[in-house]
Image (cartoon, rainbow, N blue to C red):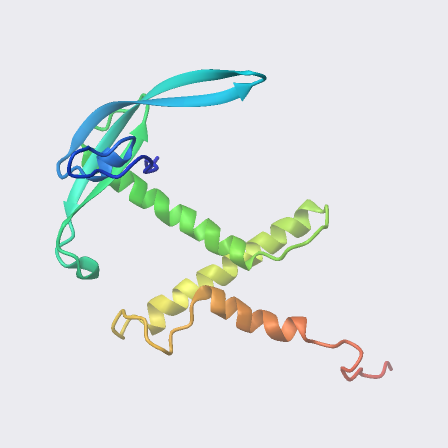
Length: 181
């Protein structure tokens, strides 16, 4: 899992503390880190410590996002051996796509209080379908254009707002009803 950066920033005289020291690294590294947790129980403080392994991978940005520097990626792990730090980076990049798809599908998920599992599954499947339709549209229609966000581009969240507005403002009472035969 990616390592959360915590601690004090480094100054001229003092080095960075905590896990922030790993963000300043410019080469691949392997290290052990001790995490200390303090909890107050009654009048006294209880301190617990745990150790885990830290792996770091650095890569050149080469003008990406108009930056020319090295960027450090730190990962906490335990009991796994990949051999190279780059493998940690590549495995997490694949995981990031999965997390993004779930985040976007939850943005489109219909909120309900029903206890029917099939209905909940249907709503979740509908949100995944909307997300996948959006991705397919972007691949097919926007593939020929340059991949830059223009003023015409509508994000997934904005698209959901456009779809949601007429549904929320629909008045059932004023809609014309067809007579029954």
